[in-house]
Image (tube, rainbow, N blue to C red; front, side):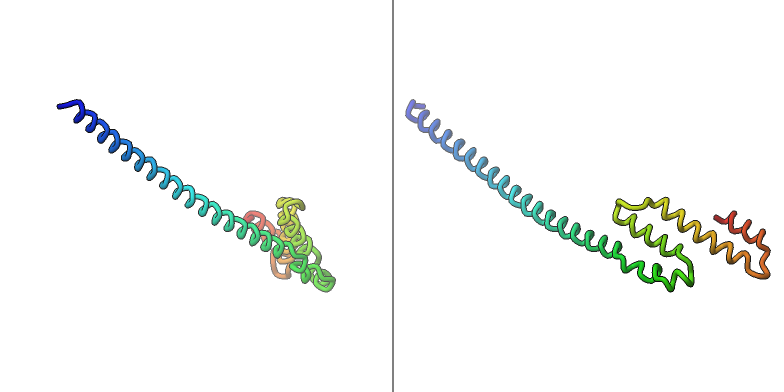
Length: 141
């Protein structure tokens, strides 16, 4: 093998290797660009979805905390006929939905008072043994 053939083979081999490496790096960069573009699109879609969900949650929270939900239970006529415990409980639950009002325990206490009054009213009806009725309901709780 002559020196000229060796040089030509070296140049040809180096050119092929360099071209191969260049194509490999270029394809790798194209894949990274494609992945980055897809990631950006996905992140934008998730951000849009998250904003939509947050807006809908706010709308639902506003509907659940709307004062007109308690208009009937807190009306003067209803409280005269049935007492104010339902109004108190609903108002308490309305306040817990906003996150900075009454605690859930306080609302449960109001509900327990209302339930106890209802049980007592049922157990003191004529023809019912009050002691047995209250004992039964107390054990069932």
